[in-house]
Amino acid sequence: MQQFPEITTLLYTINTKHNDSIYDLDPIVYHGKGYIIEKLEGFQFKVSPKSFFQTNTKQAEKLYTITREFAELDGSQVLYDLYCGTGSIGIFCSNQAQKIIGVEAIEEAITDARENAALNNIHHSFFTAGDVIDVCDNAFFETHGKPDVIITDPPRAGMHEKLVKKLLEIAAPVIVYVSCNPATQARDLALLDEKYAVTKMQPVDMFPHTHHIENVVQLKLKTVI
Image 1 (cartoon, rainbow, N blue to C red):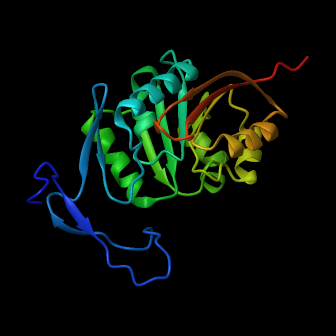
Image 2 (cartoon, rainbow, N blue to C red):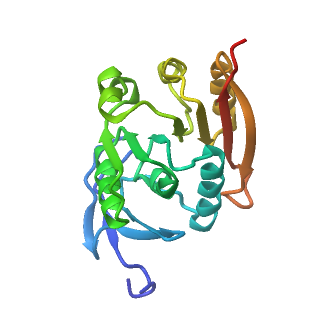
Image 3 (cartoon, helix red, strand yellow):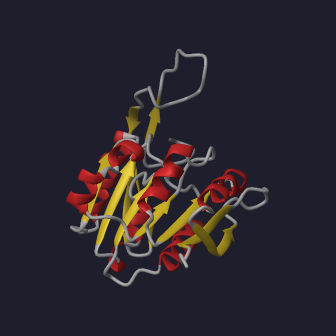
């Protein structure tokens, strides 16, 4: 803190396990509020230590802008943001959507997402914690509406095969697939090919001086003849 006074919050964890995962640990606030506020365009995002947020903020703005363009929103659509984390992509797209539905397995991230919606005065959103496969059933669609557009931003392992099958079952007109691992993305796209055609693709250099990228793909339902 003496050497780097610009650091606003410091946390630590005590890990007695034989791995470095944090999901089952409780970060302890040593100094500050215990979270940071990031800004993208005119939006603000509270990010807690166990919530995911893109590390390269300037490029995240470019990544989300491309994602929003690929979603082709006109204000009338119900948008589902899967693996929504702190709600960043859904909130970034909120001005162009009729309703935002965010689904994320990590409860702490959903808490942040709800706070971020309130922070940005977004009242047409709903965020829920759980597995997409379990959450997105007929009763959920009756309550919140079926998706016109789905944005999915899974971890490096990509989407579970059951989720891919779920997306094929839902058959939303447009899917935007954001991936930090083009290999698992290619695997999932091959499965989605049963009903979807890849219509646009744009890589984004999120990690300069490395071989890593984020890749955004737009898919549209194939026309049945």
